[in-house]
Length: 164
Ligand code: ADP
Image 1 (cartoon, helix red, strand yellow):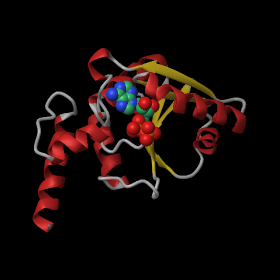
Image 2 (cartoon, protein in one colour):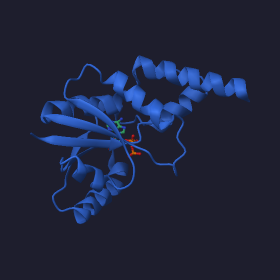
Image 3 (cartoon, rainbow, N blue to C red):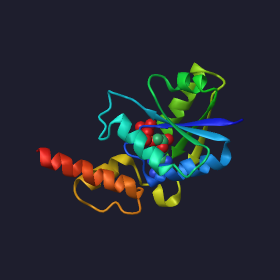
């Protein structure tokens, strides 16, 4: 059974991520979406919220699992006996960092292969950061994130405005 891990922060999951998930699910027997629990990064959504959104968005894809991980991705991948890492590539700007990470992961564990899927044309400009920026200013993010994510962003920023 070919198991692949698709790691990321998913703060929050966008249609660009979802497109990669769906395509990866067609290529491998099982895809584990691994949500990074990085406390040095300032995330808008908590780990539980990010996990919950990913689970809701992917509930109809049968060969998807959603898990959180801490520490080295290479260790998580080995623990899961997966050995394939999926990453999405949007533009040349993604390449340098992604290349470095894939070489480093190979150095940490030579059995690990990184498979890059190129972003769909309509999502090459899309990132969680730009979504958060636009949503925080009240701009429309329709068609760029799943509806549950759109609602969660609306609620999060409404809650923040109430607090400030
Ligand atoms: P990270 O913080 O690890 O980059 P992200 O959640 O931002 O986590 O992204 C996870 C993966 O999804 C990365 O490989 C990233 O390049 C990819 N990705 C992000 N946005 C898109 C998109 N719009 N289209 C395709 N891949 C994407």
